Length: 187
Image (cartoon, rainbow, N blue to C red):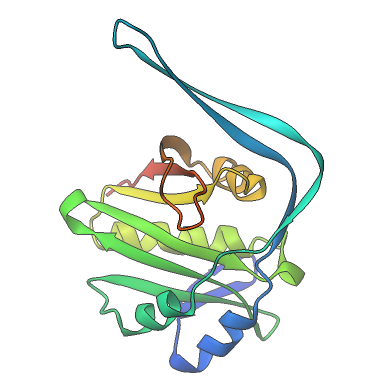
């Protein structure tokens, strides 16, 4: 168990699944990251990312899938981890960590904090626990993907030391672009 700022992190149990599924993971944003890819006749490719202000506040429903949470409960510790965060005697968030051993990496497949419990360092505690798991399993890189419109998650990643390390313009089922943020794990 990991504890940061009065947040306790522990392995999820089947009894935690319904609480995790009930979390409000939606978010609001005034900004998005825009991606611009240009090529020229010499074969050079220039990629630009910039923050763009939206004309009005956008509310986004988080694209969570119950199947990922259910599957993560069955993973063995060598495959990944499903962790939950408790604060004040109640579950407040969770993180699903998937090990990609052939790449020496740990992917944060999902990290969510209930809307009512945000800005209490719960996400930071979960990220710290994910980093500790990656260290324990001797993985060299920790990364997370976020939608370009999830500006709060982008800010969270950067504030916690993760840096932009790539993108995929066909990553999410709904057609959204994924931005990848990561950090080297000190073993």
